[in-house]
Image (cartoon, rainbow, N blue to C red; front, side, top):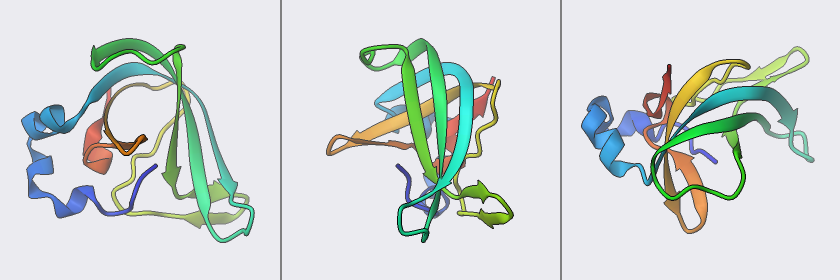
Length: 118
C-alpha cells in the first residue's frame, strides 16, 4: 500500500543508490494483470497490479511467485482518481520494483522512482 506524495518529499529519492539502500526487497517480474476498483464505500479507487516474480535481486524470496501491488488511484468507468507520485502499472510490462517493509506492510520505495521499466 502507498501513501501519496511520499517520494516527492524526500530529495534523496533522486539518487538511485538511496532507493537501493532503502529497499529491503528488489524484485523483477512481469505485470500480468491491472485492475482498478472502488472500495466498499465508493470513496476511494485503488489499483491492483499482479506481478509474476521472475527474480529477486535483493531480499528473501516470498512463498510463491506472485505479488499483488495495491496503489491508490486509478480509473473505474468514466471516473478517475490521480494520486501524486504513485507508480502506474501496465499489463505485459517487465519491471524492477523496490519495496520496503514496515510493520508487516510493504510499500514502494520513493513512489514512482522505485519502479523501473526493464
